[in-house]
Image (cartoon, rainbow, N blue to C red; front, side, top):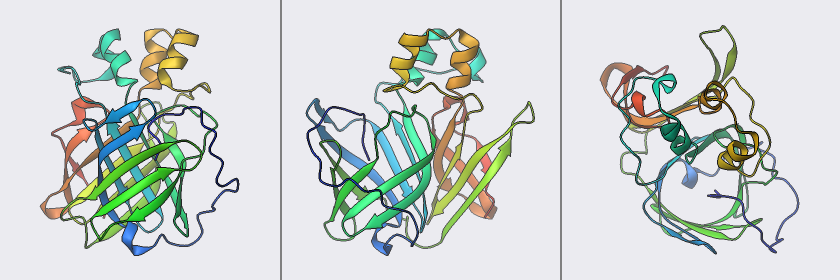
Length: 247
């Protein structure tokens, strides 16, 4: 899965893989990215998790060096904090596999639509290691399967009602002892290369910027009695909270 869009002359495949059949069983579980290599450098410090079920995926990417967030909501954050949150990435949707090619069709995306497909060529090295190389853009990612991510697999694509009664898409995913929850924003994003570019171009006020960043992607461990403990989230104030799982 691409870390950011960049120019490339690679053109291995031009058709879209449609998500019809379940993904092969070797994909299913929770993968943690250990390394990213692009023409712009190497990243082995960002916190990146990809949870894959038979049809649905969830992904969260938090850069290293996150500042302290000691406020209970987005509306209480400073502009500096909000601008840092714009660096995060994550998405959820359907996954399609054809041969050694994997495409992630994003229904929810923390970053704006930029016209690029998310498609990689996958090479498994045993059960617990996966090498992904870019098809439309040039990159290499090294993934490792998290322990305790085999066993019970569950997924639920649903909607969630916000405080203003609007409903937005939401995903609940579970693999072994791990879960991920993704809830979309209510405010649409302008098309842009990334959120930082959109912010520079459109100069949103704080209310609009807060609405753009109001996407929850939370990842954590399944506890007893259908409870989940959030360990990492695109909304920092959600970390450490317990949530009721729908499974």
